Length: 406
Image (cartoon, rainbow, N blue to C red; front, top):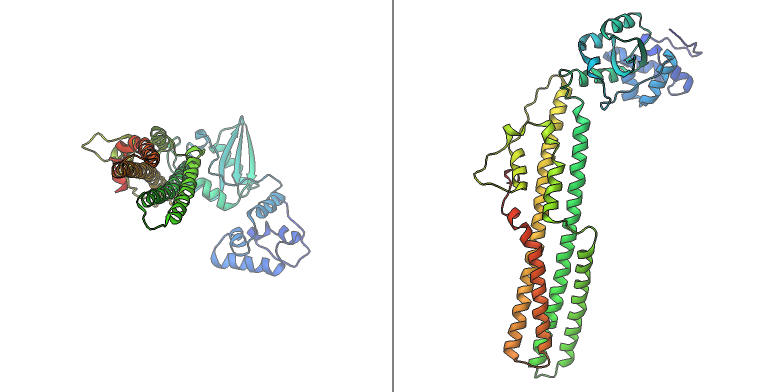
């Protein structure tokens, strides 16, 4: 074992002695080093834990110190590491914790071992008896990392591990979050379209009011009515321009089938991590695709087994994913309702202006202003048709609400 001849007056124990080089590097002062060792002994904590938590020494610095001390590469815990099932067969977590080592990688005929003390003479014999390989490569790791390896990879039988699922679950949550963000953008576009529609409605209303007053005016206020008509035209043009811009934008809401299919695709991970047959809600009606997706996670609940602790974290990760799936389904429904509201707003406005145009033609008979009445009728018909294009595709999905959203 290699030791360092430090010029500082520090008497370090076995654990702290591995980090004496931190004094040469100027990471700690002699007084801080002594204080950390006293705290470690008094509290029964690992010296490295005291350095990280109370003295904010980065993990990479500690690993670099151990690398210099043992003259071997270091390795960190990573739950994404694909540890082969053959290395996990027959491992005893308590025995691994006692000597602080864990097999992490098989590179052809070489097995890489993460160990807290790679120079422990007992370690090599134990590794050779447990893991069969032609060559062994030892890499130093912090005790905390080795404990995480043991907790995450030795919960279940090889091939049925759950500890390493959290990365996959987190990836699925991110995928659903991206889709919900996209849906929120679609809803914002729909809200912007309805706002522009309100401007258009007010503009046409001002023009219609000015037209009625001009036809029936007897008080010599024609200039005011023409001003009102011009203001309405400007306001309506502004609203129409804004709506057409939203209509043409790349972020316009997708078609109904696309919306539902993408939502279903983001929830496919449930098939790999959950037994949906036991938690789905039975329905008496056939239900739409989106409603069935909501029903299959509506009755889900997690029963926690807190020992070991990381199993509980994995169950909680599964629970978070199901809740995220429910939020994704709810976001899809909100987008559908936003489309329906937009369509209904157009239908309502179109019917109102069509009725107004016919009413003006009937009341004032035919004159040069009849062209404006016809314009109102045509605009109203197009608005109502556009509203039907928004509303009818989502009518069926809107009528079915999943149990998880109520």
